[in-house]
Image 1: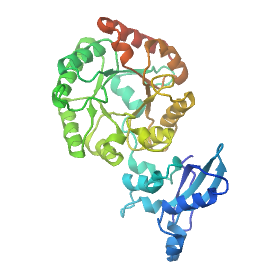
Image 2: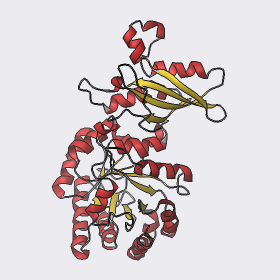
Image 3: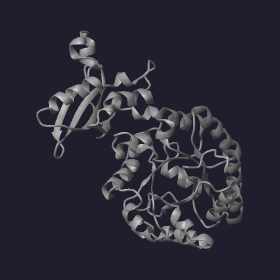
Image 4: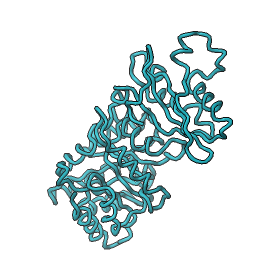
Length: 386
């Protein structure tokens, strides 16, 4: 649903929201109206006696379309003002509250798409770097005709001591990897404390950069309560770390947006952990909403990996991350989840060069041949230019 899908009102801009609802044909009209009311005024309509509230605030059912056996696509428009603060700026928490607050508790309702009024998404800022900014930081050609795909590796498994994680980091960096990220399970555990790990891994990356003359970005995992996120972001800044990994659904979407906007001035990779906890369409959540809230790169499971995501869904997420969006930079798609070096040509055929390929376990399985296996990954990713 494009952002031009706005319902013009006499006084209020409206946000058009699409829900996928499981219902019988006999009940769908009543359920659609109930969702419209629940997501706006949350009282029986006969309680709403104020004419302005009835006209401008109460949700409206705009369209109901069959969407497969037992399902319907229901378009409801909501007042944009209900998502804004007194200063006229959208609130992250209130926006999601109005889009899918109470209705998320109905197991037959899924948030499928959102059409935002002009300028609404731009208030959130979007990626600070995006795909082109990340390429520039790495010294990689940004011209589409000659641009190459980027490569990413993960430090895992958790449980390893800091020295071993730093050794892996150094090997990946020397072997040509562009971005090295913490496994999302790495936090501030006793076996690899955050501050010690970050300093050691960033030092390893810096050493490799001096040896090879090429830039590498290390992305530590930021996870925890807001005060801890801010403190750890400060450590990244003090140590000259080049990127960060954050799972928006684990830390909370408002906290993620504030972290990106107020505490980080480096590219942010959004991890999909916990994204399946809510019935929100994954293309919408990962491809558009994470991007809107500031994710420079979006990690998601590629089809035929460890997760049963379809080829079509993976393509849609990548397209949503890269699609033109006035005032919002393009985010970098990062397919992952059980990928192997042998599948790199297939991945590049599917995504083209506007992608960063993330391989973890397939590299680490090489054991003592890790460096050679990593170089083979880099060479395969560089082999195809689109």
